Length: 299
Image 1 (tube, rainbow, N blue to C red):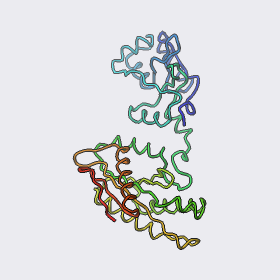
Image 2: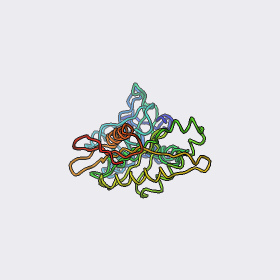
Image 3: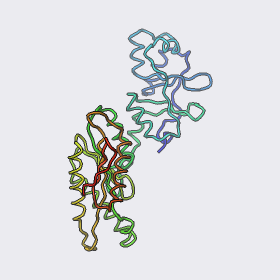
Image 4: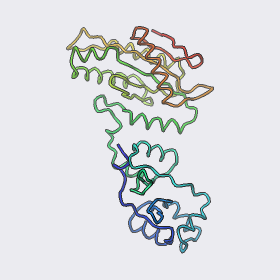
């Protein structure tokens, strides 16, 4: 999903010589939350939001040119823009981190192409964009939103379980992809039913799942991983009673007393641990040890 799929084309613009009174009238009559200030080449140089309008009214700047007013706003930050071909998730990340609601949209030459607001995203993004339609758990888009939430909360302890279904290609080849889908849905349901409502399950790849556990030490995360491994191993299917599904799980703690690492880094370490589990024979849990980098088999 690209920014250009969500943005409003032909945004309302003013030049630096326009007076504040006109801008206020434009925003009121058109019921919009921002106006983009452009130069003679129609390139965005600033943006005026409702918050700026309140400041203008309080300061009594109604009759002054916009360009002069903006120079008087010492706390006014440099203009942030987004390119029209960027992923929409980058826009959401900017909104979250910068605490803003509107972004001018430009092309690769920084020519103004439109404007995007938080409201545009809320109105146009389907809930399905953040959930895997097969398993009904979060997808990678949803994972990105979790990552943004984590960045806002300092020093919160959380762990990642990276779960990979063993020999899943063989299941698809022997029993067919339709049955393989049934296996994926069953495992996803088991994961959701056996973690806390405050934790998260993500379908990361074809037969890969991530479980994000909040406010847990490594030993507790290990116990949950082992519990999930054993429950999945007991799953049976009426049409194929001979089939036994096993999983390999890598566990990494993302935040310790000494340091926190970002979610992507934590996932990478959990991925390394699950690879080690595969090497050791599958159907087991392996931990990533932060101090030594050693992986410990817990099967």
